[in-house]
Length: 487
Image (tube, rainbow, N blue to C red):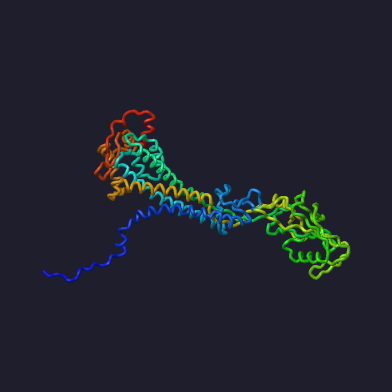
Protein backbone atom coordinates (compact mmCIF):
# COMPACT_ATOMS: atom_id res chain seq x y z
CA UNK A 1 0.00 0.00 0.00
CA UNK A 2 1.48 3.28 -1.10
CA UNK A 3 1.04 6.44 0.88
CA UNK A 4 0.55 9.74 -0.83
CA UNK A 5 2.86 12.65 0.10
CA UNK A 6 0.47 15.25 -1.21
CA UNK A 7 -3.04 16.09 -0.27
CA UNK A 8 -5.79 15.84 -2.81
CA UNK A 9 -6.59 19.27 -4.26
CA UNK A 10 -10.14 20.26 -5.12
CA UNK A 11 -11.19 22.59 -7.87
CA UNK A 12 -12.18 26.03 -6.59
CA UNK A 13 -15.95 26.45 -6.28
CA UNK A 14 -17.73 28.23 -9.08
CA UNK A 15 -19.64 31.47 -8.59
CA UNK A 16 -22.94 29.60 -8.68
CA UNK A 17 -21.74 27.08 -6.07
CA UNK A 18 -20.61 29.90 -3.78
CA UNK A 19 -23.97 31.66 -3.85
CA UNK A 20 -26.29 28.64 -4.08
CA UNK A 21 -26.89 28.53 -0.27
CA UNK A 22 -28.00 32.17 -0.30
CA UNK A 23 -31.72 32.47 0.56
CA UNK A 24 -32.73 34.31 -2.57
CA UNK A 25 -36.46 33.95 -2.06
CA UNK A 26 -36.34 35.23 1.50
CA UNK A 27 -34.15 38.14 0.46
CA UNK A 28 -36.35 39.15 -2.49
CA UNK A 29 -39.55 38.81 -0.45
CA UNK A 30 -38.27 41.01 2.35
CA UNK A 31 -36.92 43.44 -0.23
CA UNK A 32 -40.49 43.88 -1.49
CA UNK A 33 -41.37 46.08 1.50
CA UNK A 34 -38.70 48.82 1.08
CA UNK A 35 -39.22 48.75 -2.68
CA UNK A 36 -42.96 49.31 -2.15
CA UNK A 37 -42.26 52.06 0.40
CA UNK A 38 -39.73 53.85 -1.81
CA UNK A 39 -42.31 55.53 -4.12
CA UNK A 40 -44.18 56.94 -1.09
CA UNK A 41 -41.03 58.49 0.37
CA UNK A 42 -39.90 59.76 -3.01
CA UNK A 43 -43.26 61.28 -3.93
CA UNK A 44 -43.64 62.89 -0.51
CA UNK A 45 -40.29 64.64 -0.80
CA UNK A 46 -40.88 65.60 -4.43
CA UNK A 47 -44.40 67.03 -3.95
CA UNK A 48 -43.35 70.47 -2.78
CA UNK A 49 -40.57 70.67 -5.36
CA UNK A 50 -42.97 69.77 -8.16
CA UNK A 51 -45.50 72.34 -6.95
CA UNK A 52 -43.02 75.17 -6.65
CA UNK A 53 -40.81 74.52 -9.67
CA UNK A 54 -43.32 73.14 -12.18
CA UNK A 55 -46.97 74.04 -11.65
CA UNK A 56 -46.47 77.42 -9.99
CA UNK A 57 -44.61 78.86 -12.99
CA UNK A 58 -47.22 77.83 -15.56
CA UNK A 59 -49.48 80.52 -17.04
CA UNK A 60 -52.35 78.03 -17.23
CA UNK A 61 -52.60 75.38 -14.53
CA UNK A 62 -53.29 71.72 -15.48
CA UNK A 63 -56.97 72.01 -14.48
CA UNK A 64 -57.40 74.65 -17.21
CA UNK A 65 -57.58 77.69 -14.93
CA UNK A 66 -55.60 80.87 -15.48
CA UNK A 67 -53.03 81.28 -12.75
CA UNK A 68 -54.55 84.60 -11.64
CA UNK A 69 -58.11 83.23 -11.41
CA UNK A 70 -59.47 83.45 -7.84
CA UNK A 71 -59.97 79.65 -7.61
CA UNK A 72 -56.70 78.65 -9.30
CA UNK A 73 -54.06 76.91 -7.20
CA UNK A 74 -50.61 75.51 -7.79
CA UNK A 75 -50.77 73.22 -4.72
CA UNK A 76 -50.17 69.77 -6.19
CA UNK A 77 -52.34 68.01 -3.58
CA UNK A 78 -55.37 70.24 -4.09
CA UNK A 79 -58.64 68.32 -4.57
CA UNK A 80 -59.22 69.97 -7.98
CA UNK A 81 -56.33 67.86 -9.28
CA UNK A 82 -57.75 64.54 -8.07
CA UNK A 83 -58.27 63.17 -11.58
CA UNK A 84 -56.31 65.83 -13.46
CA UNK A 85 -52.87 64.74 -14.73
CA UNK A 86 -51.01 67.63 -13.11
CA UNK A 87 -47.63 65.96 -13.68
CA UNK A 88 -47.82 65.99 -17.47
CA UNK A 89 -45.26 66.40 -20.20
CA UNK A 90 -44.84 66.62 -23.96
CA UNK A 91 -46.41 68.60 -26.76
CA UNK A 92 -48.14 65.96 -28.88
CA UNK A 93 -51.09 65.39 -31.14
CA UNK A 94 -54.23 63.63 -29.95
CA UNK A 95 -53.23 60.42 -31.75
CA UNK A 96 -49.84 60.34 -30.04
CA UNK A 97 -51.19 60.81 -26.51
CA UNK A 98 -53.94 58.26 -27.17
CA UNK A 99 -51.38 55.66 -28.27
CA UNK A 100 -49.34 56.30 -25.12
CA UNK A 101 -52.46 56.02 -22.95
CA UNK A 102 -53.54 52.72 -24.54
CA UNK A 103 -50.02 51.30 -24.27
CA UNK A 104 -49.92 52.24 -20.58
CA UNK A 105 -53.25 50.53 -19.91
CA UNK A 106 -52.20 47.35 -21.68
CA UNK A 107 -48.58 47.03 -20.55
CA UNK A 108 -48.66 48.52 -17.06
CA UNK A 109 -52.34 48.09 -16.18
CA UNK A 110 -52.98 44.56 -17.47
CA UNK A 111 -49.37 43.43 -17.20
CA UNK A 112 -49.18 44.65 -13.60
CA UNK A 113 -52.43 42.86 -12.80
CA UNK A 114 -51.01 39.57 -14.11
CA UNK A 115 -47.93 39.98 -11.91
CA UNK A 116 -49.95 40.81 -8.81
CA UNK A 117 -52.37 37.94 -9.49
CA UNK A 118 -49.49 35.45 -9.76
CA UNK A 119 -48.09 36.58 -6.40
CA UNK A 120 -51.56 36.34 -4.86
CA UNK A 121 -51.96 32.79 -6.18
CA UNK A 122 -48.63 31.57 -4.80
CA UNK A 123 -48.95 33.21 -1.39
CA UNK A 124 -52.62 32.27 -0.83
CA UNK A 125 -52.09 28.64 -1.85
CA UNK A 126 -49.05 28.19 0.36
CA UNK A 127 -50.83 29.85 3.29
CA UNK A 128 -53.95 27.69 2.85
CA UNK A 129 -52.03 24.43 2.83
CA UNK A 130 -50.18 25.54 5.97
CA UNK A 131 -53.48 26.44 7.64
CA UNK A 132 -55.00 23.06 6.73
CA UNK A 133 -52.35 21.28 8.80
CA UNK A 134 -54.27 22.11 11.96
CA UNK A 135 -57.70 23.17 10.76
CA UNK A 136 -60.18 21.90 8.20
CA UNK A 137 -61.52 24.14 5.45
CA UNK A 138 -64.62 23.90 3.31
CA UNK A 139 -64.82 22.65 -0.26
CA UNK A 140 -65.62 26.08 -1.64
CA UNK A 141 -62.78 27.70 0.27
CA UNK A 142 -60.23 25.27 -1.13
CA UNK A 143 -61.56 25.58 -4.69
CA UNK A 144 -61.56 29.39 -4.45
CA UNK A 145 -57.91 29.56 -3.44
CA UNK A 146 -56.66 26.81 -5.74
CA UNK A 147 -58.56 27.61 -8.95
CA UNK A 148 -59.93 31.18 -8.93
CA UNK A 149 -57.66 33.10 -6.60
CA UNK A 150 -58.23 36.40 -8.39
CA UNK A 151 -61.86 36.55 -9.41
CA UNK A 152 -65.22 37.92 -8.39
CA UNK A 153 -66.19 34.52 -7.03
CA UNK A 154 -63.17 34.55 -4.74
CA UNK A 155 -64.29 37.89 -3.26
CA UNK A 156 -67.56 36.24 -2.23
CA UNK A 157 -65.64 33.34 -0.66
CA UNK A 158 -63.37 35.61 1.40
CA UNK A 159 -66.36 37.75 2.39
CA UNK A 160 -68.37 34.78 3.75
CA UNK A 161 -65.33 33.24 5.41
CA UNK A 162 -64.81 36.47 7.38
CA UNK A 163 -68.10 35.74 9.19
CA UNK A 164 -67.48 32.02 9.73
CA UNK A 165 -67.81 31.09 13.39
CA UNK A 166 -64.75 28.85 13.52
CA UNK A 167 -66.11 26.41 16.10
CA UNK A 168 -63.48 24.33 17.82
CA UNK A 169 -60.75 26.88 17.17
CA UNK A 170 -59.00 28.87 19.87
CA UNK A 171 -59.47 32.62 20.10
CA UNK A 172 -55.97 33.42 18.88
CA UNK A 173 -56.22 31.07 15.91
CA UNK A 174 -59.72 32.35 15.09
CA UNK A 175 -58.40 35.92 15.12
CA UNK A 176 -55.54 34.97 12.80
CA UNK A 177 -57.96 33.29 10.43
CA UNK A 178 -60.25 36.32 10.34
CA UNK A 179 -57.29 38.62 9.73
CA UNK A 180 -56.13 36.37 6.88
CA UNK A 181 -59.59 36.45 5.27
CA UNK A 182 -59.72 40.26 5.47
CA UNK A 183 -56.23 40.47 3.97
CA UNK A 184 -57.14 38.08 1.16
CA UNK A 185 -60.32 40.05 0.42
CA UNK A 186 -58.47 43.38 0.26
CA UNK A 187 -55.62 41.93 -1.82
CA UNK A 188 -57.98 40.30 -4.31
CA UNK A 189 -60.10 43.44 -4.61
CA UNK A 190 -56.95 45.51 -5.23
CA UNK A 191 -55.69 43.15 -7.92
CA UNK A 192 -59.09 43.19 -9.66
CA UNK A 193 -59.18 46.99 -9.50
CA UNK A 194 -55.55 47.51 -10.53
CA UNK A 195 -56.07 48.18 -14.28
CA UNK A 196 -58.90 50.63 -13.59
CA UNK A 197 -56.89 52.47 -10.94
CA UNK A 198 -53.85 52.67 -13.18
CA UNK A 199 -55.99 54.04 -16.01
CA UNK A 200 -57.56 56.63 -13.69
CA UNK A 201 -54.10 57.66 -12.49
CA UNK A 202 -53.01 58.76 -15.96
CA UNK A 203 -54.53 60.80 -18.75
CA UNK A 204 -53.99 63.61 -21.19
CA UNK A 205 -54.88 67.29 -21.19
CA UNK A 206 -54.92 69.93 -23.89
CA UNK A 207 -52.20 72.54 -23.65
CA UNK A 208 -53.75 75.91 -22.77
CA UNK A 209 -52.75 79.51 -23.25
CA UNK A 210 -54.11 82.58 -21.40
CA UNK A 211 -56.28 85.08 -23.27
CA UNK A 212 -58.09 88.32 -22.50
CA UNK A 213 -61.51 89.09 -23.98
CA UNK A 214 -61.62 92.73 -25.08
CA UNK A 215 -64.65 95.02 -25.18
CA UNK A 216 -65.62 93.72 -28.62
CA UNK A 217 -65.53 90.07 -27.56
CA UNK A 218 -62.24 89.31 -29.34
CA UNK A 219 -59.60 87.15 -27.67
CA UNK A 220 -56.17 88.68 -27.18
CA UNK A 221 -53.22 86.47 -26.30
CA UNK A 222 -52.13 87.44 -22.83
CA UNK A 223 -48.53 87.71 -23.92
CA UNK A 224 -49.60 90.77 -25.92
CA UNK A 225 -50.94 92.51 -22.80
CA UNK A 226 -48.47 95.17 -21.67
CA UNK A 227 -48.48 96.87 -18.25
CA UNK A 228 -48.82 100.64 -18.64
CA UNK A 229 -45.96 102.78 -17.34
CA UNK A 230 -46.98 106.25 -18.58
CA UNK A 231 -50.01 107.87 -20.17
CA UNK A 232 -49.51 111.22 -21.93
CA UNK A 233 -52.95 112.77 -21.49
CA UNK A 234 -52.47 115.72 -23.86
CA UNK A 235 -50.67 113.72 -26.54
CA UNK A 236 -52.40 115.75 -29.29
CA UNK A 237 -49.67 118.34 -28.73
CA UNK A 238 -47.04 115.87 -29.92
CA UNK A 239 -48.89 114.44 -32.92
CA UNK A 240 -51.20 111.74 -31.48
CA UNK A 241 -54.96 111.68 -31.87
CA UNK A 242 -55.61 110.07 -28.49
CA UNK A 243 -53.80 109.94 -25.15
CA UNK A 244 -50.44 108.25 -25.64
CA UNK A 245 -50.15 104.85 -23.88
CA UNK A 246 -46.57 103.86 -23.02
CA UNK A 247 -46.26 100.17 -22.11
CA UNK A 248 -43.46 98.42 -20.29
CA UNK A 249 -42.36 96.73 -23.53
CA UNK A 250 -42.22 100.04 -25.44
CA UNK A 251 -38.62 100.77 -24.47
CA UNK A 252 -38.06 103.60 -26.98
CA UNK A 253 -41.14 105.54 -25.86
CA UNK A 254 -40.21 105.06 -22.20
CA UNK A 255 -36.85 106.66 -22.90
CA UNK A 256 -38.58 109.57 -24.65
CA UNK A 257 -40.82 110.15 -21.62
CA UNK A 258 -37.88 109.96 -19.26
CA UNK A 259 -36.04 112.45 -21.42
CA UNK A 260 -39.04 114.76 -21.35
CA UNK A 261 -39.15 114.40 -17.58
CA UNK A 262 -35.58 115.57 -17.33
CA UNK A 263 -36.64 118.70 -19.19
CA UNK A 264 -39.29 119.38 -16.55
CA UNK A 265 -42.35 117.87 -18.21
CA UNK A 266 -45.13 117.56 -15.67
CA UNK A 267 -45.56 113.99 -14.40
CA UNK A 268 -48.16 112.88 -11.85
CA UNK A 269 -47.81 109.56 -9.96
CA UNK A 270 -50.80 107.29 -9.33
CA UNK A 271 -50.63 105.83 -5.83
CA UNK A 272 -50.82 102.03 -5.60
CA UNK A 273 -53.10 101.94 -2.59
CA UNK A 274 -55.21 105.06 -3.09
CA UNK A 275 -56.23 104.62 -6.72
CA UNK A 276 -59.87 103.59 -7.25
CA UNK A 277 -61.28 102.83 -10.70
CA UNK A 278 -65.01 102.34 -10.96
CA UNK A 279 -65.12 101.04 -14.57
CA UNK A 280 -63.68 97.90 -16.10
CA UNK A 281 -62.10 99.54 -19.12
CA UNK A 282 -60.97 103.08 -19.86
CA UNK A 283 -61.29 104.41 -23.39
CA UNK A 284 -58.15 105.98 -24.75
CA UNK A 285 -60.25 108.86 -26.07
CA UNK A 286 -60.50 110.17 -22.54
CA UNK A 287 -57.77 111.74 -20.49
CA UNK A 288 -56.53 109.26 -17.89
CA UNK A 289 -56.06 111.01 -14.57
CA UNK A 290 -55.66 109.81 -11.05
CA UNK A 291 -58.54 110.50 -8.70
CA UNK A 292 -56.31 109.84 -5.71
CA UNK A 293 -54.09 112.11 -3.73
CA UNK A 294 -51.22 111.36 -6.11
CA UNK A 295 -47.87 113.02 -5.78
CA UNK A 296 -47.21 115.46 -8.63
CA UNK A 297 -44.12 117.27 -9.73
CA UNK A 298 -44.23 121.09 -9.43
CA UNK A 299 -45.80 122.92 -12.34
CA UNK A 300 -43.13 124.39 -14.67
CA UNK A 301 -44.16 127.40 -16.72
CA UNK A 302 -41.20 127.66 -19.04
CA UNK A 303 -41.08 125.82 -22.38
CA UNK A 304 -39.63 122.34 -22.97
CA UNK A 305 -39.01 120.00 -25.90
CA UNK A 306 -40.49 116.59 -26.84
CA UNK A 307 -37.97 114.37 -28.62
CA UNK A 308 -38.63 110.92 -30.08
CA UNK A 309 -36.34 109.20 -32.59
CA UNK A 310 -35.52 111.94 -35.12
CA UNK A 311 -38.57 114.08 -34.25
CA UNK A 312 -38.20 117.07 -31.97
CA UNK A 313 -41.28 119.15 -31.05
CA UNK A 314 -40.93 122.39 -29.04
CA UNK A 315 -43.55 122.77 -26.31
CA UNK A 316 -44.81 126.02 -24.92
CA UNK A 317 -46.11 126.38 -21.41
CA UNK A 318 -47.72 124.40 -19.88
CA UNK A 319 -45.58 121.31 -20.35
CA UNK A 320 -46.97 117.84 -21.15
CA UNK A 321 -49.46 116.28 -18.72
CA UNK A 322 -48.07 112.79 -18.05
CA UNK A 323 -49.43 110.24 -15.55
CA UNK A 324 -47.17 107.51 -14.26
CA UNK A 325 -48.67 104.17 -13.22
CA UNK A 326 -47.10 101.60 -10.91
CA UNK A 327 -45.71 98.42 -12.35
CA UNK A 328 -47.83 95.27 -12.06
CA UNK A 329 -47.52 93.86 -8.56
CA UNK A 330 -48.16 90.14 -8.04
CA UNK A 331 -48.41 88.82 -4.50
CA UNK A 332 -48.65 85.06 -3.92
CA UNK A 333 -49.65 84.43 -7.55
CA UNK A 334 -52.57 86.83 -7.26
CA UNK A 335 -53.43 90.20 -8.79
CA UNK A 336 -55.29 92.49 -6.41
CA UNK A 337 -58.57 93.79 -7.88
CA UNK A 338 -57.86 97.14 -6.20
CA UNK A 339 -54.51 97.53 -7.95
CA UNK A 340 -54.12 100.88 -9.70
CA UNK A 341 -52.07 99.34 -12.50
CA UNK A 342 -53.39 99.62 -16.05
CA UNK A 343 -52.78 97.39 -19.06
CA UNK A 344 -52.84 97.90 -22.81
CA UNK A 345 -53.35 95.37 -25.58
CA UNK A 346 -52.77 97.06 -28.91
CA UNK A 347 -50.01 99.61 -28.77
CA UNK A 348 -49.76 103.34 -28.09
CA UNK A 349 -53.35 104.26 -28.95
CA UNK A 350 -55.05 101.27 -27.33
CA UNK A 351 -57.85 100.83 -24.83
CA UNK A 352 -56.72 100.61 -21.23
CA UNK A 353 -57.82 97.83 -18.89
CA UNK A 354 -57.62 97.76 -15.13
CA UNK A 355 -56.97 94.81 -12.83
CA UNK A 356 -60.66 94.20 -12.19
CA UNK A 357 -61.34 93.82 -15.90
CA UNK A 358 -58.38 91.43 -16.31
CA UNK A 359 -59.58 89.16 -13.52
CA UNK A 360 -63.15 89.16 -14.85
CA UNK A 361 -62.31 88.51 -18.53
CA UNK A 362 -59.00 86.63 -18.45
CA UNK A 363 -59.11 82.87 -19.01
CA UNK A 364 -57.26 79.92 -20.52
CA UNK A 365 -58.29 78.41 -23.83
CA UNK A 366 -57.24 74.88 -24.91
CA UNK A 367 -54.95 74.58 -27.91
CA UNK A 368 -54.48 71.90 -30.54
CA UNK A 369 -51.69 69.95 -28.79
CA UNK A 370 -51.80 67.65 -25.78
CA UNK A 371 -49.74 66.50 -22.81
CA UNK A 372 -49.78 63.08 -21.16
CA UNK A 373 -49.02 62.47 -17.52
CA UNK A 374 -50.09 61.46 -14.01
CA UNK A 375 -52.43 62.71 -11.35
CA UNK A 376 -50.12 63.23 -8.40
CA UNK A 377 -52.84 62.50 -5.83
CA UNK A 378 -53.74 59.22 -7.54
CA UNK A 379 -50.06 58.35 -7.95
CA UNK A 380 -49.53 58.88 -4.23
CA UNK A 381 -52.62 56.79 -3.40
CA UNK A 382 -51.45 53.96 -5.65
CA UNK A 383 -48.07 53.97 -3.90
CA UNK A 384 -49.83 53.55 -0.56
CA UNK A 385 -52.06 50.78 -1.96
CA UNK A 386 -49.01 48.96 -3.35
CA UNK A 387 -47.28 49.21 0.01
CA UNK A 388 -50.30 47.81 1.87
CA UNK A 389 -50.61 44.96 -0.64
CA UNK A 390 -46.89 44.19 -0.30
CA UNK A 391 -47.19 44.16 3.51
CA UNK A 392 -50.05 41.66 3.28
CA UNK A 393 -48.13 39.38 0.93
CA UNK A 394 -44.94 39.46 3.00
CA UNK A 395 -46.80 38.91 6.29
CA UNK A 396 -48.72 35.90 4.96
CA UNK A 397 -45.56 34.44 3.42
CA UNK A 398 -43.59 34.85 6.67
CA UNK A 399 -46.47 33.25 8.60
CA UNK A 400 -46.44 30.26 6.22
CA UNK A 401 -42.66 29.95 6.22
CA UNK A 402 -42.40 29.79 10.02
CA UNK A 403 -45.50 27.76 10.89
CA UNK A 404 -46.07 25.37 8.00
CA UNK A 405 -44.57 21.89 8.23
CA UNK A 406 -45.29 21.24 4.55
CA UNK A 407 -43.59 24.45 3.47
CA UNK A 408 -40.44 23.56 5.40
CA UNK A 409 -40.44 20.18 3.67
CA UNK A 410 -40.54 21.81 0.26
CA UNK A 411 -44.25 21.38 -0.52
CA UNK A 412 -45.31 24.06 -3.04
CA UNK A 413 -48.92 23.63 -4.23
CA UNK A 414 -49.55 24.23 -7.92
CA UNK A 415 -52.45 24.08 -10.34
CA UNK A 416 -52.00 20.48 -11.49
CA UNK A 417 -51.32 19.03 -8.04
CA UNK A 418 -54.34 20.91 -6.67
CA UNK A 419 -56.52 19.46 -9.46
CA UNK A 420 -55.36 15.93 -8.66
CA UNK A 421 -55.93 16.34 -4.91
CA UNK A 422 -59.31 18.01 -5.28
CA UNK A 423 -60.52 15.38 -7.73
CA UNK A 424 -59.43 12.62 -5.37
CA UNK A 425 -61.27 14.01 -2.33
CA UNK A 426 -64.41 14.73 -4.40
CA UNK A 427 -64.41 11.15 -5.63
CA UNK A 428 -63.99 9.97 -2.06
CA UNK A 429 -66.93 12.14 -0.95
CA UNK A 430 -69.34 11.52 -3.83
CA UNK A 431 -68.31 8.05 -4.95
CA UNK A 432 -67.32 6.45 -8.20
CA UNK A 433 -70.13 8.20 -10.06
CA UNK A 434 -68.49 11.60 -9.58
CA UNK A 435 -67.16 11.58 -13.13
CA UNK A 436 -70.67 11.08 -14.55
CA UNK A 437 -72.35 13.89 -12.61
CA UNK A 438 -73.14 17.34 -13.96
CA UNK A 439 -71.66 20.40 -12.35
CA UNK A 440 -74.83 21.46 -10.56
CA UNK A 441 -75.31 17.97 -9.04
CA UNK A 442 -71.74 17.98 -7.76
CA UNK A 443 -72.26 21.42 -6.23
CA UNK A 444 -75.40 20.20 -4.45
CA UNK A 445 -73.64 17.14 -3.02
CA UNK A 446 -70.71 19.21 -1.77
CA UNK A 447 -73.03 21.90 -0.39
CA UNK A 448 -74.81 19.29 1.70
CA UNK A 449 -71.58 17.61 2.75
CA UNK A 450 -70.49 17.57 6.37
CA UNK A 451 -66.86 16.92 5.44
CA UNK A 452 -63.88 19.24 5.56
CA UNK A 453 -60.50 19.21 3.85
CA UNK A 454 -57.37 18.99 5.92
CA UNK A 455 -53.77 17.75 5.89
CA UNK A 456 -53.45 15.06 8.57
CA UNK A 457 -50.39 15.04 10.79
CA UNK A 458 -47.55 13.10 9.24
CA UNK A 459 -48.99 13.30 5.72
CA UNK A 460 -48.17 15.59 2.79
CA UNK A 461 -51.48 15.52 0.89
CA UNK A 462 -54.94 16.98 1.36
CA UNK A 463 -57.46 14.54 2.76
CA UNK A 464 -61.21 14.49 3.46
CA UNK A 465 -62.41 14.24 7.06
CA UNK A 466 -65.99 13.81 8.26
CA UNK A 467 -67.18 16.32 10.89
CA UNK A 468 -70.66 14.88 11.54
CA UNK A 469 -74.08 15.38 10.02
CA UNK A 470 -74.21 19.19 10.29
CA UNK A 471 -74.25 19.61 6.54
CA UNK A 472 -77.38 17.54 5.91
CA UNK A 473 -79.70 18.82 8.58
CA UNK A 474 -81.66 21.98 8.12
CA UNK A 475 -79.81 24.94 9.63
CA UNK A 476 -81.04 28.30 10.86
CA UNK A 477 -80.25 31.39 8.81
CA UNK A 478 -77.75 32.48 11.45
CA UNK A 479 -75.87 29.18 11.36
CA UNK A 480 -75.99 29.19 7.57
CA UNK A 481 -74.51 32.66 7.54
CA UNK A 482 -71.69 31.79 9.95
CA UNK A 483 -70.97 28.40 8.40
CA UNK A 484 -68.64 29.89 5.80
CA UNK A 485 -68.64 29.65 2.02
CA UNK A 486 -70.23 26.64 0.33
CA UNK A 487 -71.09 25.59 -3.17
